[in-house]
Length: 382
Image (tube, rainbow, N blue to C red; front, side):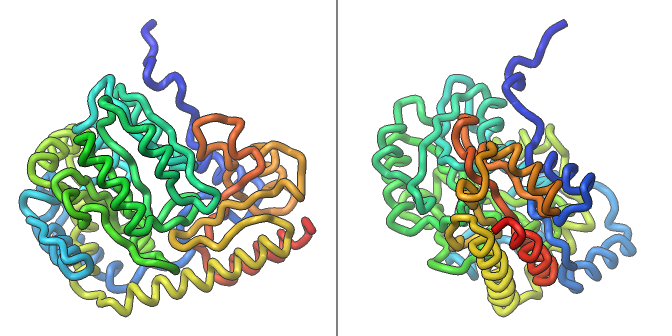
């Protein structure tokens, strides 16, 4: 019997496994990053209205026209990017499919893809599925890119670099200087920037700068985002891609054969949100998450974890070495079972299992009440 060689090195998603562990022990789930609070009423009503209007059949493969128009206006309004909604936007089944579709379309066997670590767990497998070699580059202690190591990692085989800002799991927000340095390398080596910007509006410090707005990068950047985090609808699976026409055309073909299209009525609802919610919504989103961040951060520090408050996204990567000698996977299960708080083992965010052995990641996309209960349980550690 033939085996799928490209997937033999994959493990089951550690994040989703920890959700199952949390459910088994009745723990507070701070492992998987989905909110435990409601989506905006406007979006829910728009989804219901779309279903009642019988928008229930296939949308155009690369996205409903209304949503693509709303996205083009959003990028113009927030980032001064002029985007052709007909030729430069692809709507996908979540940002995860967006990244996979883009890489499958644009990366060939034998290519190399630079990935900063720690990293979201899908990036390595995405590269391997393309037959490419992932080249892992360590970040600084604060989560920022090591630019010397980045320069050393680029070669004549480099097809792309994956940038996730704000970052999961470190919370680092890539600054303009960092992006300009990476941009120079992409231009020099004729490489594509695959940039995951799903947390673009969950920002506490600095400024979100799409690398596509850096000189020379518009024609070589695939910008991935989506509705999941901004509108608290992780189960709707509406992801987005902005890319120049030549790259977008290739991605459309791959996306078509992977999933055909994202859910039609939910695309209409996301469009309604983009059309109707003004900047005050996004400001409140960030401020609400700042409060949640501070509750969890204070609770972790009081419990004896070593960590820093993230500048963006909704995760805290914490070191537990002062609390336990267990390796990260055993510590995460023990913490879930004995103290009722689930996290993700840190090693799942690194290329080698020896890395991240004293770290776990917590998600704070939960109500203040949920986070306060988690902090109370964690206090028993100290």
